[in-house]
Each structure stands twice: as structure tokens, then as C-alpha cells.
Image (cartoon, rainbow, N blue to C red):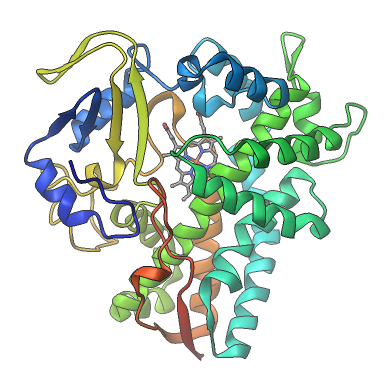
Length: 380
Ligand code: HEM
């Protein structure tokens, strides 16, 4: 079966695959319809995220000695315990307290774009903003940001293609050195070092694993959300004009971008038992490929799904997943991108993005977005 990398637009392919609903090839099963994807994601007892159980002992031991498996690749009961611990250090209220900091950062970057008039949107704002925010939250000094970019890029490319051991090792060492159990500084690493539930604390390896996850799960994804939203607005100057007149619609634009150009197009599980998804046979140890980006364009769920319409009523996209692994960083990603759109529309009357070509796209089996997008802006 032909499976596109997201260097190409996948949406026509999805449309034709949705007519077949679920497709098996050997022990790989590809799921395209919204309800079927939700069935798998919400049934974590059958469909496991714990892929490490399938790795050889050598690789497993090498990985485990440095960073414990993150919540993304754990099943209950460990997933439940760990997620409880980390989410207490990552509450929506805490995230909202970053509003001013993010706004100032975004405003500065947008002023810079205006000064240049023509520049690369990704390197001026979509990329640096999320990485600066998460580094600030974690307590990483600014001088190390360049190193972070290299790691984050290497890990994003390796996602879905097997672990990148060298990068994992370098990052683990870096974060292990940052752990200070006696520190009471107001940053995520020191909070993670000190949170406890029933007297249980996170181990060094768990703190390291979680910090790496935040870097991988949070950066490239939010970068793509910001870029994709601005690309869509450049395709729809009428909607951008509405945003300039009324920045309350920024949140709706973010939600529709998540549905229409989902930054994470697919995720995976493996079957622990035989099962049937809506009559389709799944066998133990099958790999299940779940196309979130296809589910989000399912014509049985979303009216006129190939139309970018921030004002649609049904906003129940699954761009952040579903079930117990629902994205922990969703409030942060939403806040960052909403603020960028609001601050952008305050200062820029109109803008255009120069023709994008395939080489500008990210080469990934999971992420959907652009490495580069040249923007021309006209100031208010
Ligand atoms: C999980 C998407 C931003 C942290 C997930 C999942 C998706 C997702 C689809 C579930 C994967 C699965 O079930 O296999 C996105 C998108 C983002 C984004 C589209 C931006 C637009 C962030 C940010 C952070 C973050 C900013 C943190 C700083 C996490 C974590 C998990 C996760 C920790 C694992 C949760 C668990 O396993 O319980 N994300 N994410 N994400 N995301 Fe995000």
C-alpha cells in the first residue's frame, strides 16, 4: 500500500482510503474513519501505547538506564500514576499565568517581522516562540537554546522511525544535571523534582523522560500549528480581515486549523488481544496506524470537511488525540497560537505568503507542516 510521508499533501489519499474504512497489510492495520480512530484511542486495555515491550532487551536497557519511558508510551497503571504526578505541575491555571510572558514575546517577534517586511515566518516566530516558552517553563537558560533546537529537530525527524539513541543520551545527561531536589525555584523541573502523591516522588529518570517528552511533543507541533494557521489565513484574506476587526475569533481559527491541517497527522498503537473494530478483525500484536488528520476530515462527522471554516459548529476534532493520552499540552498550544494570532492582527493590516513548494515541507511520517514560509507584511 502507498503511504505518503507528510512531505506530500495526504488529504486526497485519505479521502479514497476512507471509502475502505480500515485496510490491512500484513500485520499493519490502517484506520481512517473518525469513529474507528476514537474506538481504538478510547480502548487502551486492548490497544497499547507501550511499544517498548516489543523492543529487544539491549535497546530497552540502554534507553531505560537514562530516561524512564514517558507517559506517551506507557499504559495504566503506570501511566495513570505518572500522569497524575506531572499534570499537577502542569495545570491549565498554571498555563494561563504565562499569558503576559507569551504575549510580550510574541509582540517582540511580530515587531521584528514588521521591521523586516519580508522574512521567514517559521524562523522568526513559529519556531522560536514555543521553544522559548517551554525552555522558560522548564528553567533552561537561554544560552542553551541552540542546543535545544538541534535536539528537537533530530527527535522530530526520528519520530515514528525508531529511537535516536545519541540525541536521547545527550538530552538525558543535560536534564539529569539540572535536577536539584533542594531547589524551590518556580520552574517545571524543580516542581517535578518535588511533587509527590502518597509520598511518592518522580525518579531522576522519570523527570528526565518527561522533560524530553515536553521538548519533543510540544515544540515542533506548536510551531506547525502557528505556521499552518497563518498559511490558512493568507489563503483566506476575508477571514483575516474579520480577525483584524474582532480578535475574539482567534480561538476559532486555531481550532479549525487543528482540524483542517492537524500538526500531528497520525499516531500508533499495537493490539494486545484479538478484537473487532466495527466488524473488522484485529489480531494480537497487530500494529494499528491511526490517521487523526483523516478522521478530522471525515465527511460523516464534519459538514463540508475540505472547507476551512472557523465558524463551523462541530469543533470536536481529535488533533490532540482522545482518551487517556489526550494531549497534556493542549492548553499551552492553544494559548500560544491564539496569542500569536491576536498580536499579529493588532499590528498587521494584511499579509501574503510566497508560493510554498514541496522542499519547504517537513519530512516526517507524523508531523505536518513547513520548515520555511516567506511572508510579506503590511503594517496597520
Ligand atoms: C500527547 C498533539 C502540543 C505535551 C499528544 C497526543 C497528540 C498530541 C495527538 C496523543 C498521542 C497519542 O495518543 O498517541 C499535540 C498537538 C500539539 C501539541 C497537535 C500542538 C499543536 C503539546 C505541547 C505539550 C504537549 C505544547 C507540552 C508542552 C504532550 C504530552 C502528551 C501529549 C505530555 C502525552 C500525554 C499522555 O500520554 O498521557 N499530543 N500536542 N503537547 N502531548 Fe501534545
